[in-house]
Length: 269
Image 1 (cartoon, rainbow, N blue to C red):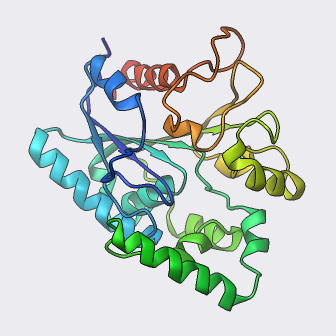
Image 2 (image 1 turned 60 degrees about the vertical axis):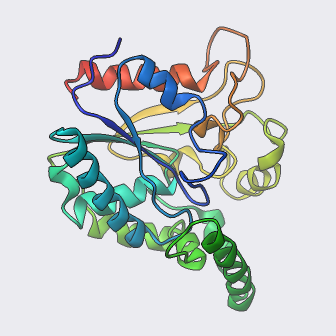
């Protein structure tokens, strides 16, 4: 059992939702609950701006604290969700409610690949964003804004964001990065992996390790087998171990989460 002082809130990234039948995080929440952890979800929009989702997450945290009677939360955030939580902490004052923020493959330092994509004709990106916003609205988003959500991955945005949202001394920040071993490791991310590889180098299908570094950077992780760990693997998207091979690297993302939460417990969180 893990003797964790504060509850956990899991915060998803761009395009994901907590209110659908196929929920995020796979086997991870149940595994943590079996270890005695109290686990909750962010429930923010999948395609809103960092700022809009930051407001929703701060509201959600206050609701959880009121319900549980806990003093603070431990937050584990994937991808863009990490930026949203940093905004809530630094700009909205959620630092008084958050003990730790663990970010997983979050684009803290932006993506040069997204810089190039956003240089495409504005009408083209705008049209695609409008279609995605319409779909997002029908599946539960209250404030979809895919165009600005994509902009938040650019280096121009993150440079300004980092300056305007300095870390709070009241919160422990740590970050993790992941890698696919090659473009065949995850078919769903074949195209983005290949594009990012050409422009920036090794990546998890979307993010490079350099982009994910923030606070106490805990390193770059890949799978124990030939596959590696993709951006969506971090959410246990496929709900199964990466490999039966035990050895160097991560065999099952569930074990990885159990380990990092155990570390939080040992640190007094």
